[in-house]
Image (cartoon, rainbow, N blue to C red):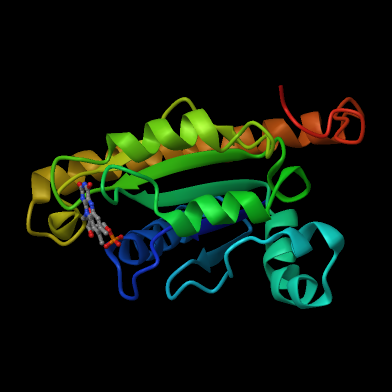
Amino acid sequence: MQLTIICGSHRNESQSERISKALTDRVNELSLFDSVENLSLAGNPLPLWDESVWHGDEKWRAQLAPWRAALKASDALVVVVPEWHGMVPAGLKNFFLLFGPNELGHKPALITAISAGQGGSYPIVELRSSSYKNSRICYLPDHLLIRHVAKAFTGDDPDGDQHLWQRTDYCLHLLREYGSALVKVRDSGVVDHKQFRNGM
Ligand SMILES: Cc1cc2nc3c(=O)[nH]c(=O)nc-3n(C[C@H](O)[C@H](O)[C@H](O)COP(=O)(O)O)c2cc1C
């Protein structure tokens, strides 16, 4: 079972990156998956979508190949998403234009939203309402929401950290179980992205 953690912040040394690393370490401590891959949007490594992606342009093919390989090999995903002006960062929306059912389809994903303050709920709602239709990514009903992120998992707030770790461990265990369960769906022969290329 392979897990991929997608860090949705474009900023270098972002809080999303710090939380992605904390989750990676936790998954390894708990031995929940055989391997954990990290894909980060820091520094905007993926160009903005243009139509030549659909025509198999060689430049795009080479650029996307390592991302496609990592995502295809994944059985489960964590999407770490900061709230930027009450939205999902544009680079993460671009990610969902570039990768679809071949890489993400019928794979469970744990949303982990990040806010410097009291926010963080808008990007959860946005991902749940707008990133799944064609990709067929399957968000878990539970998600993580890390508010006042600068204090989280730092030891500054031991009670807060304990509560957050309990919730994190619970969600990661759930993700592992959904990961196992959805292999059956993908291998069932029922999934048909040729006839039903896009969701309705
Ligand atoms: C362009 C921009 C807009 C932001 N807008 C919000 C916001 O609407 N709500 C919020 O809670 N935090 C907002 N933040 C603060 C982020 O929550 C904060 O940067 C936090 O560390 C998570 O983002 P990061 O992973 O990029 O560090 C914004 C940050 C940036 C860079």
